[in-house]
Structures are given as structure tokens and as C-alpha cells.
Length: 316
Image (cartoon, rainbow, N blue to C red; front, side):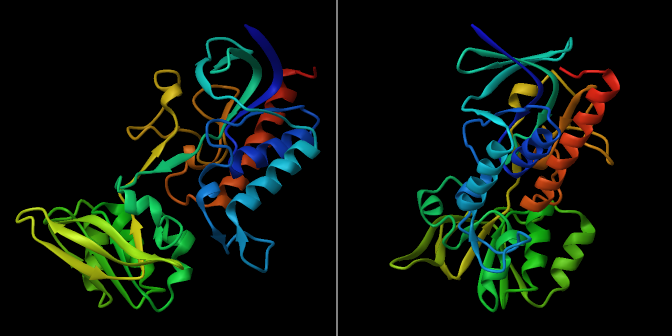
């Protein structure tokens, strides 16, 4: 089994991971980035990106991730196509094991494995993802100005996204499979007071409807959870807001996670419960979940790691 040593090991290759790699490499820390199963993260399935600073025109998510990867490599990051499956934080250097039988020994670790949106699991949902189906209203809501949309879910995220979409859409329908919401009462009050929001209770989305040329959502088929009756709801966009799942399975029992699996850390830095281990991006951020905030946290992770190494006197 081969071993690789590095002062900084970055796990994950979305905006947080690439930003951490760029800053760590520029600090002459010679970082190694392990890309994971889905290099580039959620932006690889995001078509139009209109809110990343620095670009006047709409850009494509995969293109942005490719540019970040090239920049990270250009300044000296070594990128390895592998996935970390186990970690040992009992001693430093930390030991991480990859699927490819590689062992990575690292003085510091920056975890940026992200989180995945939970989806309904419909074939039609997958087909129209990026063409009217989205998992992030704050990312894609701008594209539905003056249009009719629906949000699926009953928790805080769903209610917040429905309220947010009233800034763009002409009508917002919240679809919930139960007869009451799980969201906080203050959010529910705001939802029910909005003249733009209509709630459909006791229904699930059975199928996303749309056109193939051009690809676009035209509606959804709903099924009543109590009577099994179906109805067609015409709309232009569907936002699935049934939660996110952080990619932290390999960390369970190894460091402090909250009840949802997100990494618990300092509110002011990227530090975690383990000295020398830092976290950045959606793996610890359940509130903002934006590419630009993830990239900013990646920068923080690299700077915190550099400061830690300096304090420990690690120079080679």
C-alpha cells in the first residue's frame, strides 16, 4: 500500500476545496487535493450561473469548476482522483485511506466534501434538473422572474424558499405531503400572510411534466396522499426543498458532527473539534450554501492551516 505525505491534504473538489488549494499552494504548502467521486461538486450539475462575482455574462457551472481546477493546478496543487473512505485523527500526521489503496499522511486536513440536496427520486425530476427543476431558490430564482413556480417540502428550508421566491415569481405554490408544516411558527406566519403563496396540502409530486425541445418544465402531476386522486398543476419551475445531506459518512465517530451530520466548528474560523483539521463549504454550512461563500470558507481553511503549521514549526 503506497503512502503519500503532505503538509495540507484537502478532501473535496468543489469551490471550497479548489479555493483552499489555490491559497495553500500560493503559501508554498504544496497541497494535495483528493477530488472525490464527483469532482467539482454540485456546480457540475448547474447550468447557468449568474451570481458568481467577476462575470458580467452568464457562465456554466462545469466551466467555472474547470477554471478553478486549472488554477489550483497552475499554482502547484497536486490533484488525485480518489475518495477518502477512512480517517485516523488519533495522531499527527493524520492518516487518511483512499479507495485506491493509497494512504495519505497529512499535518493538516481541510475537509470540503460538501452536501447533496435530497431529491424526490423521480426519473422525470432527474430529466429536467437544470431545465426548470432546482434544489436552490437563492441560486436559480432569478431565472423565474414573473413566472409561476412550486416548492416541495414542509420544513424551514421549503418555507424559506417559498417566501424567497415571492421576490421573483408571480405565484408560488407550496406542495406538502402532510396537512401541517414542520417549519418554525414564525416562518409559517410569514408564509400564510403572503398573497403570492398558495399551499396544496396532502399531495406529493408524482411526475414532472415538460417539453423536450427546448427542454423546459410545464407542470407537475400531483397525487393526493389520502385519496390517490391526481391533478395537473401548470407551472414553469419546481424547487425541491426536502433537505440536504452532508458528505460526512467517513467522519462519523471520528469528529464532532451535529444531528444532521454537518461538521461542528468555530463560528469565526474554519477550525473543527480536532486541532489541525479544518472544514469549509457546505459540509459545515447549512444556511447559505452558495458557491461564493464556499470559496470564501476554502480561503479561510487554507489560511488557518498555514497559521497552524507555522505555530507548530512545520516547515517541510
